[in-house]
Length: 544
Ligand code: G6P
Ligand code: ZN
Image (tube, rainbow, N blue to C red; front, side, top):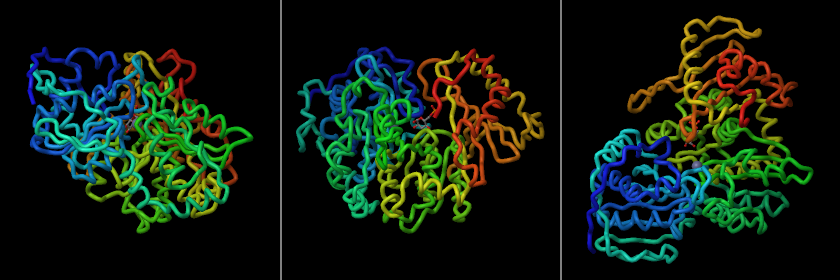
C-alpha cells in the first residue's frame, strides 16, 4: 500500500448540521472537499486505529464514488476493518443496526435524507457513533474545528477501484474490507420484533396495501420483507429500485411528495393501507383508506398498542417526543403511568434517554418514529409496527384511530411551513414574539386565554447538557397550543414552522377536517406573529 499525503488549503464551511454535512453535489465535488471532511472526521475519532467502521449510503448520485475515496482514506488512516453494504447501499436505520450488531467503532452514512439527488441535487455525509446514533454535538464541533485547520490528508494512492457489488472479504493494505448484504441483518431484526405470522395471515386473507419506496433506499428492504418474507403480491412495493436521482422526485414521505400513493389512497380505489419512506429510510408516512394518520397520532397509537408486537410484549418503560410533536403521546403515557419526555427537535436528543433505558419509544411530528432497537428513526419499522397492530386488532386504520380518539380524545394537529423566506424577516418575527413573551400569560386573544408563553429549552436528564432557544410556545387554558420555530435543516433562506394543536375530548366532534378544527388557532397565530405582514406571505408553502 502506498500512502500519499496531499497538502490542502483548509475549508471553513464543513460544519455538520442536524444530520451531518449536507451540500450540493457540485460543492462536494470540489477537489479535496470530501477528503478534507473525512480526514477531519478520522482525526477527531480517538482510538480509531485498528477498529471497525460500517459504511453505506442511500444510493444517491456520487454515493459509490464517495465510498471509494473513503475506503482509500480509511486504509491509509489505519482503520482495521470496514463493513460496506453491497452496491454501496445501507439505509440509515440498517446502518445503525449493523453498528450495534457488530459492536463497530462507528459508521459513515452517505445521505442527504429526503433532499433531492442527482448531479444538481444534494449529497451528504454523517458519522454515527458506537451506539448506532448520530454523532453528538461535541464530536461534530470537533470535526468542524479540525476541518478549519486541516492542511493535509492521507490516502492510499495505489488502490484499484473496489467492486462494491461483489459480496465477500478482501484486503486493502492492512485493512480488511467486507462487502455485506445490506438487507439480511435488518430483516432478521424486524422478524424478531414483529409478529410476521399474523401479518402474513392478514395479507393472505385479502388485506391490500401499497408501499412507496420513492426510488430511494427502502426499496430493497421493503421488497425483501413485505413481498418476500410476508408474501404480499409482487408490485405491492412501488418505485422499489433505488435511483441516483430518485427518479427526479423529492423522496420525502408526505401528502405532497408521495404523489402516486396519496392519489391512490384518496380515491375510490384506495387500499386498506398505504405507506412510504424517505431517501435514507428513516422517515415514514402511514395512510388508511382515504385516511391520513398524523405522525403525532401514529406515535400515540403505537405506544398504546406497543405490547401487541412480540419484541415489545413487556410494554414500554417510557416514551419521548420532540416538543413540537402533539401531546397525544403524553395522554397515553399518563394513562399507562409511564414517564413522558419532551425534547428539542432532532433525533440525537433521544439518544441519551434510549441508552439509559429511560424510554422504549420515541417520535417526532416530522414523520419520524423509532424505538430502542436502533438509535435512528426507522421508516420501515414504523410501517411493520402498524401492520402488526392491524393484524392483531383486525381493524382498519380508521377504526384504530377512531377507537383511540374515543378513549383519549382527539388532538387536532397541523404544521404550516413558510419555506425559503428572507432570513432577516424570519429572525425579526421570532425576536418580536420573544420580546412579547413576558406579558402574554393571562392575556385573552380571540376568545382564548393564554396560560403560558415561553421559549422552550431543555436540560438533558442524563448528562445535564443544556439546549436553549428551541421554539416559542403559546399554551392556552383549554390545552390548545401554538409553537413558532425556525427550521434547522433548510438550505435556502429560512423556514418558519407554525405548529398548531387543539385538544378535543368530545367524540361528537372528532370527525372534523383538521384545518377547520384549527381555524381559530390559525388566525390567532397570524395575528400574534404578524406572519403575513412580517414575511410578505399570504399562505404557507406546505401544510402537513
Ligand atoms: C431531520 C432530523 C429530525 C428533525 C427534522 C426536522 O429529519 O433528523 O430529527 O425533526 O429534520 O427538522 P427541522 O429543523 O427542519 O424542523
Ligand atoms: Zn431521512
